[in-house]
Length: 285
Image 1 (cartoon, rainbow, N blue to C red):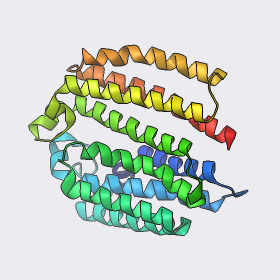
Image 2 (cartoon, one colour):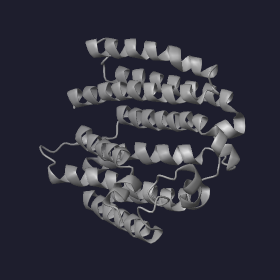
Image 3 (tube, helix red, strand yellow):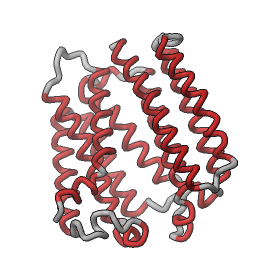
Image 4 (tube, rainbow, N blue to C red):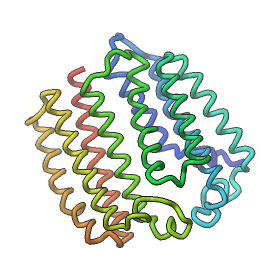
């Protein structure tokens, strides 16, 4: 078994981001002077449960990945199915133990997400929109796990809007990716939005979700009285510049290279928007 295969199965970069979202939720809701070890445990809860979700997904997709993604750990023989299953079980158990240490609320939400992820990989993967929703909920709920871990009573309208923003952005981003994968997904009878509705309608829906996320972004700023700062104007310019290539996606809906290009572009814009919101939350906390 390759050590790298474990991190590849976990999709380590993505899992680290989920862990950081948990930490952010803990910080903005905390009334404690210091969190110390609790922050580490919160990060590990997000990382381990995200890793376990990605691992079980690779286990269930191993037959398809032989043709679609031959460089993934199981198809390339970097790890056996049995070894990957043991890794998945350990990640899940340890993640849930640490979630229970945080508190009962964090444990129940984490356990619910873990069960939903297994059900998705096992039976629900081919149900229309389920992939997008489960993936999005798994990431966005990590914010609430962090809030629950420190102060379950501190859920405010700003936090709920931020949760909704993350949820919508990830749904849009996953659908955006599905546009590039439409040919392969169609051959394998996967029920994605681009396969069922076509890439043009999918592009319109993706753009609509991105626009909705921009509206939510401004809604969060309104609730925190953070409009018209220097940071606000800088991000506004970036958002306006981003709209041109995104709207062009309607005409370029069948251009796989353009779809990938706009996803990378949007990833950078979303990173800046999220960073500005995090900076804003930390300033007022």
